Image (tube, rainbow, N blue to C red; front, side):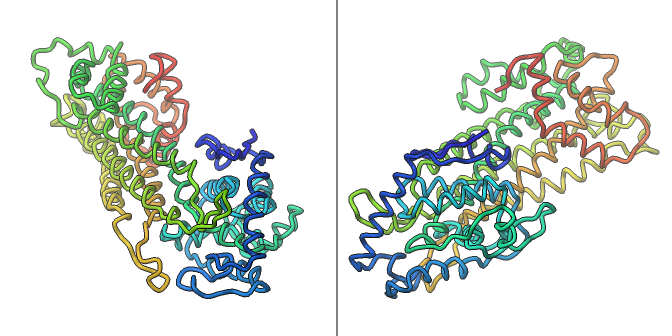
Length: 511
């Protein structure tokens, strides 16, 4: 696959294709023209000797310091070296690739005043799979992701580090030489244009959106399987009950769960039982209200990210009429808020799933399932400690759900006196979603075990698909086995596309 950078930007699917799929990148000729036009404006400013931030002045608190023409290229190189000041473990390859692609997108919009060769040099890194080594700490999401982007830009200069095949770091100069690439000599404004923007946090947010969309649908699947295994009622998910509270996400989740519970001998076995509970517990009955609210939050986040994808986030910006104006568009507040909102929602999707797991394992509440889903409880502990693990993850997600975007630490001599912490917000969101995958995997494992223990009753198509998907790793209920591999297998099944595809083949597309 090839992604073409247009003057109007790129799509979320393009970002995923490059970040995760290794797609190649090309610049549309119109983007080259747009960059050349904006560069001519910067060249005119240079010739006229006008004082313009980042072109003929220092940066941040040094914005009023004039830089002589003969030192302006040196200024740009010094900027990159000084701002590549991150520390910590390297960011994942997919995050760095997304960030570089989004920086190309920003430059290609034609408001940054850089020569086309700068954007082409970033494209070369992507296409030759040269990935800068970007430390996890350094960005405040204020003037954008300055430190992470500077670590990317430093590689263009033939300096800094790149990620090796094993995740270690290698000298950038060696990597460029092996790829047949030549270091770039920056001109006025170009160093600043390479590092000023929200590309890191936007890249992480776009990756998180894709992950959350899958996990929120799988949360409906695991909820339905758990409800089925616990002999829950399908009546709370009737469409007419959700039409009277018309939150869109709630309606989608309720419809999913209701459809997932059809054609089940397990459900049929108690449908007309007068002794059956009049009302199920909240963790069962309110599943669509929680998951649906998370879906609606995701739609808000998706809208925010889509707006950012067409935004000019550089500073200063070059306008078509020749003006170069300072802006605050690099501030990451919109993305930080969105990431924090989504982290809260995802944490709650995981929290309610853990409550269903606990109910499945509790002999006093699971409606005749054996304690901890073990046929021989006492000598065997079944899934007892899997629930411990889930509870610990829920606790961690609650800590991570505390918003990063309310925390601002002033920097740069009080010039940058309010920061967004958007990098931290999007980075911890990814951790919350990774944790959510593990929580839903525990629910999937517990629900499958519960359905197996309802034999000879035949479960729903979704239940049969889940048992088939996990069958080789999980086996039949019996004595205790090494549990961690079973949990890992459940996570692999839940995170991948095959289980959903198998279910949809039987019951049609899920919302």
